[in-house]
Image (cartoon, rainbow, N blue to C red; front, side, top):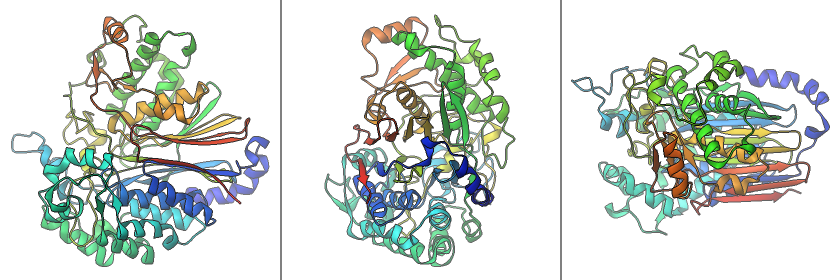
Length: 563
């Protein structure tokens, strides 16, 4: 709230100082999201006279209905906002929080080992949801239209249903055995107890009623009253620890974004409890002295992978919820610190991650859960939003009578020091479980801009989110548009496991051999990575473009001529 008040106080002065490049909006709006129905919801709101922040609520809520594998009203996310009137930005932190009864050892068995089933499946795995509070906050603080109007498309989609697509079916196959443990979950998402065929209509009347309660009563429609009582009763009946006080006490937080400069471009990106902004800024600082255009393909991949390795090492050691942890921002974002890290990089040899000090982590199966949308309105207001329930279909548990599928975000904490989570990411004391604490995230909604061009970019993809955004923004800086960012082949290094992980079409056999000769282990994924969505405003050419990731055809991107 304080950030909002300060922004309002300085708006007149700031607007008077804007350069001509930022004084006028693009005159067109654009939306790109992971589902065409959600993109249509955002377009509808923009055509009704809503601004980018209104459209962000409509898109987020629609995604919560049609992409239950990736986000939901029972999850959370980060909404990065840019305000055209005073050229300011902030991040709305709707990340889930640990219940008051949570303890650091709540997922450890009698032998002190992490019980992974407890940490990812069922009600005990769920943090207190932040998504509905964030929607209300966006609408009340920054929107132009009533919340009921913004939620209307999502309510219609819940009541009338949506058709199962390939993404829903693929990720349900990954979690189907767990989904069948709970009758309520199976009835909603697996009619007849089977993975539904493509085109099967999924109708969610209980979710529609929950959305209506939120539309009518705002924050209290979800966090107090009948819905809250059903959520707590459902959680407690299945080994959960939620209380009515946990729900009633949830609040979003407005945070200053992470900012950095790279070769004439300004980066505005997610701040902790996201690890993405700091990690991306570190990687850019490390590589900045190198002329990437003068490096050959193998040198470039090697350099970027080495930068990734070092940023992910610092992620594990230093990052967590800034309301609980003293994060060394100045050090991590310092170009001098990056210069020190750079001295350990050799262009002719990969550094073993063991030389950077940590315990080994095991290989894990990753999934393209989480979701992202990018949008801009005709005035130049921007929202880059990344939303999640963690693993596909979250904890796989829906509280009876609510339609609310619980997240399993508690697994994003470090359940034990150095113990990898479901994405192979390790953590230590900074990300230990504490009551009321927000778990560390990789979600990285980002805005990149110069005097002539602006990019709005983000993606799902677990621990790979950070590196995918990093590669995408470098492609933008290289002069390419969103069709290129969202479709380019991807590779990734996260410190541990000590390997470059890549999509099938990222490297040729000769390139893999060349990387291996430098000391890299290269692992090729069987499935594509990510689901990126981008919007670009090119002021020099007077062009607005939007694109969705071709890896999943259910996405939708549109540029809107606004009257």
